[in-house]
Image (cartoon, rainbow, N blue to C red; front, side, top):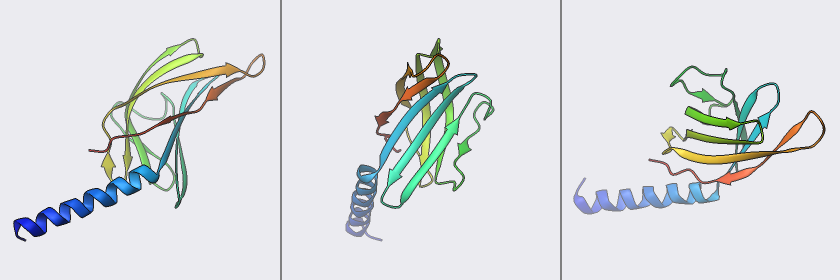
Length: 128
């Protein structure tokens, strides 16, 4: 493959990847009750995937995938502040490509005496 062909191939690959990434919607929500849970939702024209992570769901460095194995999460670090606020750093895998670290601050609101509802937050992962 000569230089021009290689350049065109890379340019087409970049544009296709960019299109898919821009069409996708990523939402994170924190659930806090008896235990802390991070939910990551991915939505596009091909469907919706939901991934639920908790500190007990993976060991250090292991990845956790949704049922269809379309999206995965790994390297989750968090700071929790009494269930109202938590900061998360993590990586997302989509299409067998890992993102850079994502930092997101999530919040909850009290919906009853015992339940804290998560406030959804959109984010845009940058894939390597």
